[in-house]
Image (cartoon, rainbow, N blue to C red; front, top):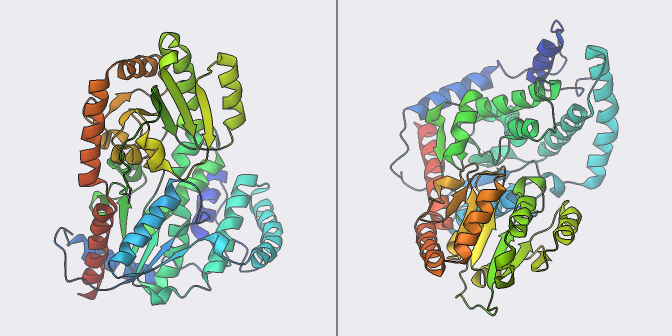
Length: 444
């Protein structure tokens, strides 16, 4: 078997254990127990003595932000990367962003043609079968790693991975480089796939992806998490509290003075039209509010795979006051005419749209998911209901429609909180302190 076949020994060993296969030698070089690994442990040990509260002398840094997903792209991850990049550049740092779609499609296709048959052969020979999900993920990992070889990682002071796959790839290269490697997970990959039946609990896929998550944590010098809701799941995968810093997402939001053109109460839901965001629950809640339907306009902002099904649901429920606006780039303008922002999400982390609504000074109705309640405090900066509870959603929406004073209070409080805690400057400033401390700790 050629050396390129499966260069991730730790994944093979995890699968061997699952299948009950006695581990056989793997031709790819194993760096996990090499000198690079020991250097990383020493580097981490030094950092552990640092409390990272005070800001050291600032240095101009060369920073690589890397993601396994296409960039730029629609969604919160892409927005986060852009905000971080621009904020760091405004502080005088050199910042590059690397993503798979920046590499040659022709080269990617050539690699795909080579690696897919060999991966299938490897898995069939070792385990007697293979799964399409593992083949696909292994292919993407391998191709992205090969593309990364063209990036001169030694020229960067800081490596910052935005997902578990990139943390694995950068971590492997970093065994020899010993650079500070940060990891910011934007979701609990395996947990969510099991929860939404994309993989089965106890399956080989769960074992495979959990091992990738554990290795990402092991490779990371430090982890920046978007909310405290990440702490318990990450701890269960082996993360130590000393290496986790919670920094809520901040944005650069251009507030537009509120200037409504509609006499009706405008309700806006801004989110990708996917199964996690709870649009169907919102429509069902609206169908229970016939007595106030003439008072409101409902705007569904965003696009996604569920649009057709949601439009059919609107027709079925005879909701004549619901409009689908599609993907929009003028969110501040939309929020300036919005009275109530609703996000009935059933699984989330820290949605950018909620943060935008807070900056826009809009009354917020959302759910107790992920880190949302860390910034939206019930009856102070918004209203919180249980995810999936249509009755609660309808009741609280009705309450907000009929109470202008409450809407103004919640919107005003949310705006003040966002200005104090959820700005680009606040987020980037705290992340930069971590960068500087990592560099200073490594130099001692």
